[in-house]
Length: 277
Ligand SMILES: Nc1ncnc2c1ncn2[C@@H]1O[C@H](COP(=O)(O)OP(=O)(O)OP(=O)(O)O)[C@@H](O)[C@H]1O
Ligand SMILES: [Mg+2]
Image (cartoon, rainbow, N blue to C red; front, side, top):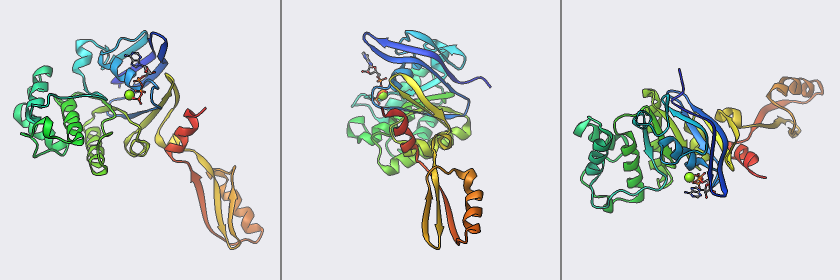
């Protein structure tokens, strides 16, 4: 199946700043891709180009097979901006009604009720934005991105204001969306969260992709630890494939082996390794 989002050789220059310097990135149907990188790496710029809000200076982006910014491409995506503000006087229901009108979504009241339930705001229909906490506004923002059921969601740090319980709600929501076949590109600084939900991770630094793969591929093996009767033995350069040989050798040397651990790094450690100078 063709990708829902495909960036090829994407470049963006803002006067003297090279925000993107040739990025290739794909999101397949139903895939949840995490976009990671330090502040200023170019993540939001990439998402804004995909939405048609910012024009690329090189390369191409296609959304559902159509050039980014075209009506067809915009119809296929839902977007939650990193910094957004809904009119303070509107209720949650009014915000969603407005976005239904803007997108031409025909779901009506049933869709609005369902979306507020989905993001964990079932009682906030008549609550005004002014009376909502930051976290509630962010949940409403996610509901807004889901209006019309687009096949692709671009979420720019959707959980930055959420408490741990709220993050779990959003994680559950993302998993539900995956089951429905919705594709998601998720910008986040929360590595543990990305590690938990994403199928694929792309790490950018200074406008370039510096690492990509599944969370399991990006985590690295970092040696083997063996518990023996004489204490813990560490084999810093060993990998999982070395374990049978190590155990055979230890046993042949008369050691009693109680436990063997392959030490793997977390996504955070792998991340810091590729983005640090
Ligand atoms: N409208 C703009 N005009 C000039 N420079 C810009 C503009 N928008 C972004 N930049 C610059 O482009 C680079 C990439 O910014 P971008 O917002 O894409 O980073 P980011 O990866 O989303 O960072 P963060 O994690 O802080 O959100 C930065 O150096 C930023 O200062
Ligand atoms: Mg950003």
